[in-house]
Image 1 (cartoon, rainbow, N blue to C red):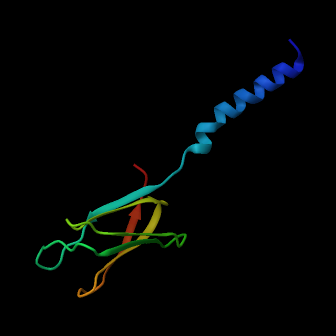
Image 2: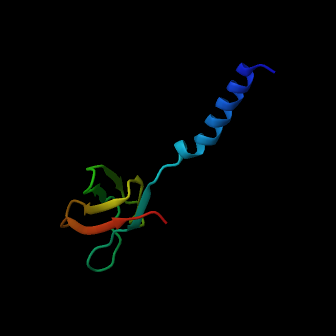
Length: 100
């Protein structure tokens, strides 16, 4: 077999071996439930998580049970805000997202 064949095979193997590392992404998610002071769920609330490290933010709306999920967030420090008309905005700081 020619040297060119072996070179192509070696390059193909190298690409194949490196692919999982290239596809691996480090991210985290946040989920929860928004309730009012009495414990009643708040549907239709806007929930935003903003990275204090990168400025990246994700926003979603709570479902009828007050639940939300924010995915594909970079790891690091965050602040989370929840708001809905008729309610005071709730801000939580000091959230640290880690992998695991």
